[in-house]
Length: 473
Image 1 (spheres, rainbow, N blue to C red):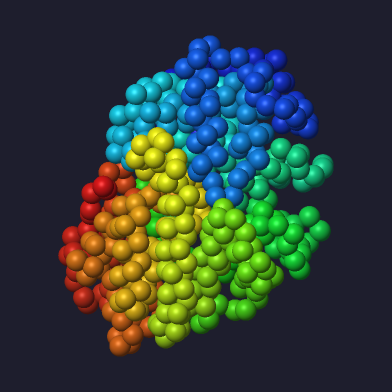
Image 2: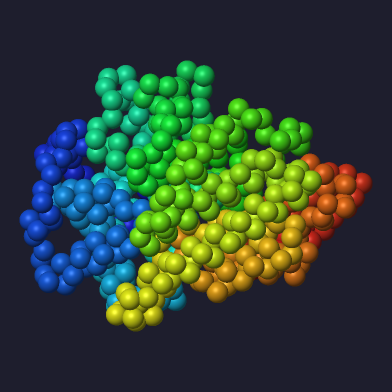
C-alpha cells in the first residue's frame, strides 16, 4: 500500500477484477482511436477528465504517448487509472495559481481528494499518474513515496519477469517514462535498489549489453530519440559515478548519503563515459536549433542538462575546489541557456495565459532549468554567475514536480544570511569537502539545515548552532 496519503480501507478486489487487471498488464493493449468510449456520470466529470488531458499535455516539454494516449485508453477498463486522472483534472480545474493549489483552495479540491483516495483503494499498484497529484498540491513527501513505491514495484516486476520473458510493451512504456523522473527522485534521495555482480537493475539494464547506456547508437534520428538516450545516460551517470546530494525528505525512511572522505579527484573516466557517448546529440543540435520553437525549447533543455551534469562529475561531487573554479565557464553557459529556455517557454505560454488568466508555471519535467540554476546559485565561485542564477529563479517562478523556485530562493537567501556554507578556494582546510556541506531536510511546512559537526572531539559545539529552520513559502 502506498503511504503517501491515508484513506479509508475498501473491500478487497474480487477474483474477476484481479483477473481483468492481470490480463490488462499481461497482454498488448487494444489501441482505441480515442477515449470517447469512456462513460462519465456527469458533464462535470468529463470536464475534469478533459482538464487532465490538457494538463498532461502542458506539463511535459517532450510529449509522452503513455500519458496522453495510452493511459486514456487504459482508463476505459481500469477504474483506478480513471479515478487517478480525474483527481489530477479536478485539482487543476479552476485552480491556476500556486497559492490556490498548495492551500487546497480550488473549487474542486474536495472531489479531487475523493477521486485520489478511490484510485488508491482500487489498486495495490501505484498508478502511472500517482506522483503528479501530490506534486500539484505541493506534498513533497507523498510524491516521493509514490516514486519510491513505483521504483520498488518495477524492481519486483523485473525480477519475476527476467526469468521468463521480456517486458510487456505497456511496462516498457512505463519504465521509459519513469526514467524522466530520475533527477526528481535523486535530488530528494529517493530509493534506488542496489546493483549486484549478477544482476543489473531494471532502470539500468540493457537488452544485449549489461547496461542500457552501452547500446546507444552513434546518431539519433529525432529529438525524441535523443531525449530517450539522454534520460538513459543521465540516469547511468548519476547512479554509477555516483553523484551525491545531501537533500532528503523527512518521513520517507531515507538518510542523506555521506560523502567519501578520500574520494579520488576527478571521478574515474570509466564512470563518466556515458557523458562522452552523448556527443552525437551535441553535434546534431545545431541542426535542430533551426527548427520550430518547441524543437528549440526541447534542444535547449537537453543542452542545459548535459552542461550541468559535466560539473559534478569533473569536480568529484563539488569537492575539488580548484576544478570547481575552472568550471565557471560551464556554470555561465548553463545559466545563459537557462535564461534562453525560460524566455522562450514564457513566450510560448503567452497565448494560453492570455486566454485562461494568469497562472503558475507547473511541469513534471526534469529536463529544464530549475535544478541547474539552483546548483549554479549555490556552488559557482563567480559572484556574477550566482547573482544571475538567483535572478532567474526569482524572475521566473515555477514548480517542476518536486522542485519549487520560491523554495530555492528562500533557501539560498537563508544559506547566505546565516553563513551556512564552507569557505572559498583560499581555505585549505575545506579541501576535499563538499562546498555545500549542509544536510537539507524537507519537512511538511519547513526546511531544516543541519551543518556537519567538527570531527575534532575537543571542539565543543552547541547542537542548536548546527541546525537552522526556515518556513516553506
